[in-house]
Amino acid sequence: MLSINEKIEFFKNILLRTNNSYADNIKEEIYEYFFEKMGDEDNIENFTFLSKFNNQIEIAEKVDFIVSKIIMNEHHAGIDDLIHEYTI
Image 1 (cartoon, rainbow, N blue to C red):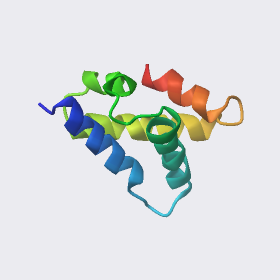
Image 2 (image 1 turned 90 degrees about the horizontal axis):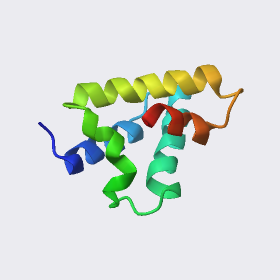
Image 3 (image 1 turned 90 degrees about the vertical axis):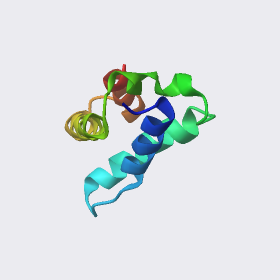
């Protein structure tokens, strides 16, 4: 089982990984939300949603899910609102 710090580091790395697609822009927005807008990246409270995941695969699947939902719904709501909704 991964520690919360390992989960945060993996989450960060997956958001920074690029595929030369529109999803890269969304992942960049998610990165900015968690690692820039939320303030101190060392504040584990910003990442409590990661505690429910047991491994890297589950975290990667959640990131893909959030990216998909944002792409499908970004014209209906702000990206920050969608990120917040899907990470609670």
